Image 1 (cartoon, helix red, strand yellow):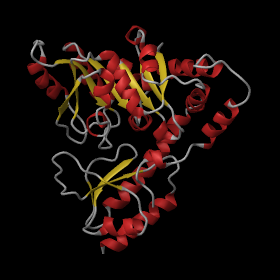
Image 2 (spheres, helix red, strand yellow):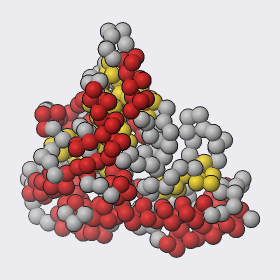
Image 3 (cartoon, rainbow, N blue to C red):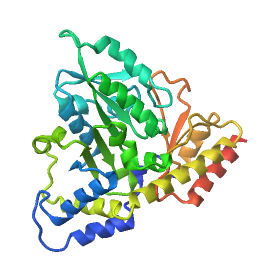
Image 4 (cartoon, rainbow, N blue to C red):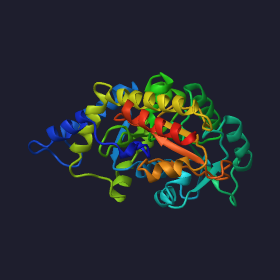
Length: 348
């Protein structure tokens, strides 16, 4: 009964095979190899757009470095109050940007709306010397509450951001799950809606360590390679990261795994919602289920070896009772049924 996070799962066999295959022979270092070129071309194919792609080791590094390219040290970044960059990446953005300030906006089910952005910008636009200069809007897709912005919602947010001179960053740690849920193309979810830079995560979707920063306008990536080098995010054996992306993108494996994880979460969510005393608090749109359980149930299950997180939010209105359960491509029906059966038994 292990549902703490999708980054607890192993590596998909096809990706592991790709890494092993990439191990043969000697190839140019630092991304000068054919696999890296193939991976970059696949990104352009998948997004139906010429883009500049850079690989890093972690999602936190991806977010911090991407934002450092579009936000000056004296700038501000509008974001959801529960976003990963605000809650779970302590100081990362500030470090890489050289001091930019996060400007959190109260969200509902992890999402913010254009009217909130417009309201915030009444304070920051026009910019004043004595105030933070707002420079970017950061969106999390899917959100930290397991919800998804539709392409139309993304476009509306991008429109208001660009109207005020803000660049738009998308934290896509679970981008595959969001695209799978929305049933749209990656292009519709990003650059066609107005997103300037995407941090595309694969480590939570079956990879070993594969995070990509995708700029949809090449000029916005000018000298970005120097930022990567300064941050220690240039890999001599880059082929092993590129091999993972080739395996993920060339036959839509990334979307297949995301759909599997989403479907597993839907089954888990539907099962929990039918148990007396349990409540699923937000729509289950990706591979995360947020639920409250009867008193003592979560504690007893953890004593029996179950793994899922207590989920605390700023201003938490669930009094510490909210639980987050995350599925992955590797989650089985038996695992779901085992957890549901134990919750039923303990809830009686």
